[in-house]
Image (cartoon, rainbow, N blue to C red; front, side):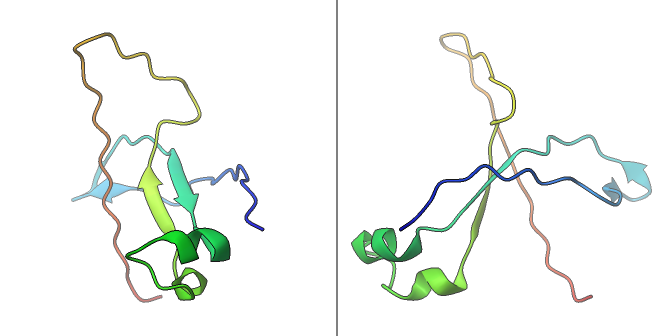
Length: 83
């Protein structure tokens, strides 16, 4: 059975761009559909859950008030490098 959990991810190291520090929100939603949910997904193979994890931006640690007609945009960039 899939179990929903809250996991705290602590940022380490430095985020930078050309020597200049970048301010960032650190909230993210990390999820995997697991076996039962994967079988119900039309565009997802029944065994593919074993080889994936989704990382999506989210504003989950603090509620974000959003007045009518206003927008709030989240953006993420993920880079993969060799160690």
